[in-house]
Every structure is written in structure tokens, then in C-alpha cells.
Image (cartoon, rainbow over all chains, first blue to last red; front, side, top):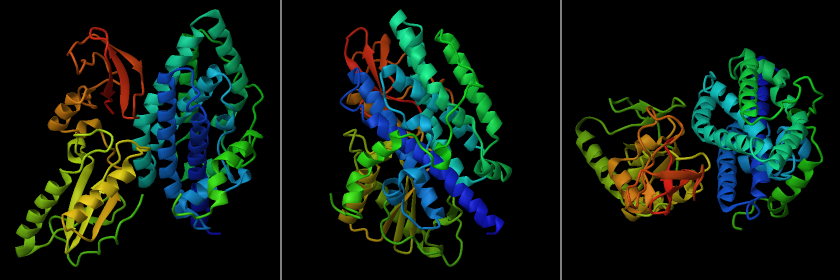
Length: 258
Length: 197
């Protein structure tokens, strides 16, 4: 492999990571359709899911053009198995109670906004244009999830306790958001993706600011963390999501009319 | 993005109308020289056709009012339209493309190609004054101010029903991703606000 091929392969993987995290979180949020605590929240959750799936589509379209196996975006989303998915472990975790759903969203949104803002400076034009579009949407996502963290954390004794428990439980999946591997290193060196340490700083800043306002304790950054989603090693949750999400496309491959 | 027809062929020689899209391909080309008048006349006619295409989610507002048609190019007999989605996940994107194709074919145009233009990203600033008035007429508060000047928090949104400034945010998201849900504290009516993005 020459260096160009290696860079293309790395970029392909990186794009799948972005797309997969968007798609899987979107699928999780869709489970709440018809089952959210209030009508307003149901609308909000579905709309966030919709933004995420739209962004996932943009990333998959780009990834598809770089795919050595020439799979189309639908194939990438619906015909790969769990070990070929590179989403964060955080986003595949169950919805749990409302505090769990909001915590997962808040941790992800803070990472997502920091990442997209940095990707707006990528030296790849296509990445920049997708990020420019997505960043406007994700700033609303973070605003909403932050407000909920504050409202519940600084709310009643019960809501505070539930929120703190949710934060403590989800914390072990946040290390991966800030982790780096050879794919990140290579693209960072080439200027395709921004400096990960900057994203990391921005994420920590959002988390600390909001948790303080919400009167919640921030667990230790040095705590033991689950890793592996970015490399295709997942918790058992992912298989169940894919089984449901991919059922139709697997039962009727390449169907043109549903 | 669904593709209609074949991409426009490369022009033989550049004209002063030529522009490059963001992938560096020639996107906008016009007929040259003595045929120029005819080309601009044809573009005018295409605008007319597009002004009849309504947004499927917001009846009475046309796609031109929303500012999502970014470019029209006519080269020989090939017409290319660059269209921006309002939101990445806007479910109406494909439907709008179908409606455009239907309107164009209905008006007798063939060889029409629609390209998705992601950048520069669509902004609510592109909604025309007429579009804003039409939104208000159907009970949707139009985006307040311009993105460049607005803070992210949309404050003091006037009620489209009774004009009261005393309103409150119910939810960041309304009936679609592009709208937030507000309620008027005076007339108590809930209403959608087209977000400033």
C-alpha cells in the first residue's frame, strides 16, 4: 500500500465512525417515538434523531465513494455486521430512564459540537461543507440536552439523584470520546481532522460548566473506561439494535419498492 | 441524493457565466455570444416554473421563498439546478426534488439534473421577505433577525396570531426540525417558530 491508499483507508474508517455514531444514536432515539415522557419531548427527540440520520447520510455518501468494496450508502448502513460498525459504545447504550437518555445525549452532543466545529477547519472541502451544515443543527442539540441536565440536576432531590446516578453510570463510556488511535493520528498529521487535544479540551469545558450549574458531581477523568467501539468491538447492545434496524434490508436485499 | 439525468457535459470554452462548484467541477455554464439573450430568457422562464413549486411541509410557501434553489444553469439543452436542504435530515428533500422534476417536465423541460448544494450551508437568512410574510400568514412566526447578528437564544418572538411580545419557549423542536414550539402568554395560543439558523 502506498501512502495515498493508506490515507484513503484511514479517512474511510474515520467517516464510518462519524456516520455510525450518528446512525446508531438516531436509531436508539427512534425507540422513544410514541414512548417519550411528554409530547414536546417526543417531538424534540424525533427531530434530533432526524438531524442525526441526515448527517449520517452525508457522511455515508462520502465514505461510499472511498470504499474499496464500492458499497453504496444503504449497503454501508444496513448490510454490515456489528464488528464492522465503528460507533462509540456510548451511543449504543439503552435509553434507560429519561435521565439516562439525556445524559447519553449530553455527553455525545458536547463531543459532537466540539468535533464539528473543529472539522470546519479541515483541509478537505467535502468534510468542511458537511460540518458547516451539521454544526448549526448540533448547537441546538447541545443547548437542549444541557438545559435538561441543569433542570433535572438542579431540580428536586429525586431528579438530582437520578441524574447523578445516570452521569456516574454513563461516565465509563466517555473515555472513548477523547481517545485516539492510528487512524486519528494519520488524519491529524495530514490536516484532514483537527487536533484531538483541542476537541478534548472543549468537551471537558462543556461538561464542567454544565455539571457545575446543575449542582452535579463530575466523576474522575482517570476512572477506568470501556474502549473498543471505534475499532469494531462492541457491547452486547449493538447486535440487538442491528437486528431490528437491518431486518427489512436483509430480508429483501436491494428491494426497490416497499 | 437521487440523481436525475446525466451530469451536464463539459463546455467547449469558458464563458463569463462559468462558475465552479465546491468540488471544482464546472457547474454553471451558459450559452455564449449571440445566444446569451436566449439563455437568460430561458432562466427567467425556469424561475417562473420553480416559483410555482410549493414546500410540501409549509403550504403556501414556495421553494423560491425559502431560498433553497441556489443556482440555475443552462448549457445547450441541459439544465442543472443546485438545491440546498434546509436541514441535513430534512425528510422533504427527496419529495421537493420530485416536485421540481414534475413541474419542470410539466412545463416541457427535459434533461433536468438536480444537484445537492451543501455549501454554503442554507441559512434562514435566505428566506425572502415575501416568504416571511407568507409564513406569518399561516401562523408560523418567521425567523427573527439575521443569523449573523442573532445570538443563539431566540428571544422575544412575537406571536403570529396576536402580535404580543410576551411569549415563551415550550420546546426547542416543533412539528419539524426547522421549527421550535412557542406559546403566547396573552392569547395562550401555541405556535411554531421558524428557527434562525
